[in-house]
Length: 263
Image (cartoon, rainbow, N blue to C red):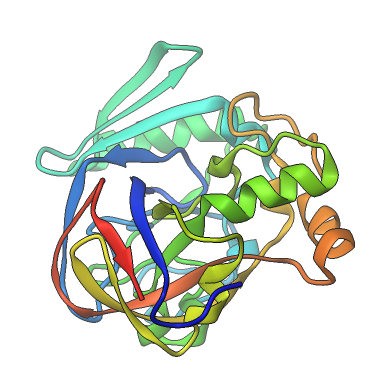
């Protein structure tokens, strides 16, 4: 661990997840506003038919109400991409595009739902529910309220390496589905930043809460197989299941890969 005021690091990678539970899109930089998460992050979701989500919902609900990696590891076998400016949404399997649809149209959304009904082996005639509420996000923190819904997730790569060394198991950082990967800090130094403001790659943020990990991290993002009990490994190695930190943007600006991290 490290003392506040002494941390020095850099931003190694940025990712946005337009559809909850689906694949990340890497970014070189992103414009952030105070109190807001990444633009288009967890902007859409695939809700369980007959579940708690209904169009018009204005409150956060549990991730278990959506099709996500916690229960549907096979989703990691798909590569998805959203072009926010045009609404173009693509799905690929092993590098081969299997769907291109326009999310601005009812027809495009219907095609997406029909594809995922097949991927998820839903009963004939049953489709996921397309979840989208303007101005809201389907983040894991959303049940904590509107402010929590807008938190940004940060992962310290040194902490991941420390877990690898303690357990002898290779751990892909993408298992943790964070928005920001940082490096150059001591392992678990991010936990010293809870309640503190610090500079993150060009914006001012405040550490809000540790990220407690769930079974979604058991899924290999490259293969879609559930092959590594990450929460149990964390518990055995450290006595907790924390890996990463949620932060709130205090002062907006451009967050860029290569930017410094200074507490």
